[in-house]
Amino acid sequence: MVNNKTLMVVVLLNIFVTGSQTKGEQDTGSHHKDSALDKLTVSQEQIFISGSDVTLRCGNLTSVKWNELIYIIWNISLQDKKCRVGVSPKLDDTCNDGKKLENTADGVSLFIPKISVEDEGLYFCDLSYKDGSYALNVSVSVTNVSTKQDSENNQRIAVCNSKYKMKAPTLHWEPAVNFSSSSVKKLGRFFMLENKVYLPEDLNISELTCVATYTSKSGSVQHKSTLLLTGITFCLRMEEETPTKRC
Image 1 (tube, rainbow, N blue to C red):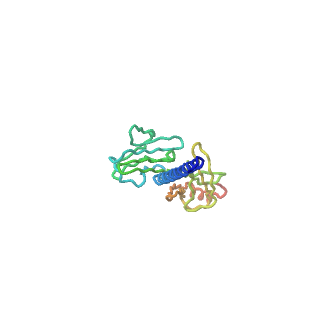
Image 2 (image 1 turned 120 degrees about the horizontal axis):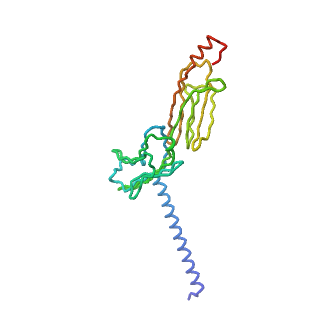
């Protein structure tokens, strides 16, 4: 006959084993759930040229039609504000800056008119439709490049500027020139990358093009700005006629 102490030990062992199995099942279920969530959310990085009209699609689901939507929400996180655009019960457009949903033959997409550096940020799309659901994170960067001719220490220089918020581009000149230098300045909410090149007096070209290259996981985008070099021919002619005069 089993005494009370032996019976108590058996009961405690059963409770411990059962509890361990249950915890293991819960941990496994939680792991599968986290893995499933990871698979549902896709991340992308996209780069656009400043001033262009941009269309963001929620992944490759271009076949989802308007009448198949349960809801679609774009939660947008910019440096100076957070807002949302979407179709869902009791959902308001809080961006109020021209961003809107479009229903086209290619499906439902987010339209951004004349994108600028102010539109750089994170765009999260949460989509539910008749046959399933989808989530997408898009990191949006915008190119911005400009050129000008200036002078420094009585020497002519060409200056290329690129304003950015998130990711700095690389700058180079075409045709290639020597004696260039780069620097970065903080301008409020932005950064300004500047590249300047000293123009020799015997330069025999009439224009220079500054090329800003933005790289991402999905590829690279180049934005160009061409500078017409004014005054070079006049300066050379003046030096031939009056060699002692400097331009």
